[in-house]
Length: 119
Length: 107
Image (cartoon, rainbow over the protein chains, first blue to last red):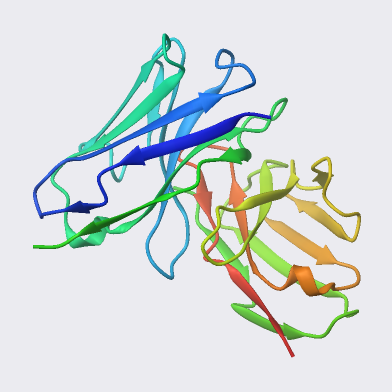
């Protein structure tokens, strides 16, 4: 089982860009897609996008124009950039890894980062 | 996107009760459905994948069933630790989508 530890700025102003990074400890970095998922306060979960070691990405169409997910294989890390932030982007952001042997369920999660957008 | 709808929004039950939560997709997701438990301030915890496969280490009182567009999560005998919010998630097609959640409360 992998341990995911994430970090990044928690308070942003409107129009700024969110940057979060997730480091993976233990387990294999290869052979997986690595995802970002968010959850507005008191609401449900929204998948943002994913990347693999080869930098192949898939994004949620509703966020695609503002999202960039990148990977640093030398450090077993992946990152999320979300531009043009607004109050509607206020949420807890999680990094996650899929269950070994399954194609889309999420087994390992980071601790979550609360990101607040406020002027 | 595939829309996932859970029912009920809230369920009140007692320790020892049998509880069923439903999840409906607006188009077929085959067997590609997962269930999660989430407690306040914590990340979701995977319970069931591929509609009915129990993740290793999850108590056997949890079970999942269904295929296509209709799915259920059943907790056979509620334990105090089970009071939480439950989410379904489809992964038949991008982008992955979640239900709105069902809050399981103590009666």
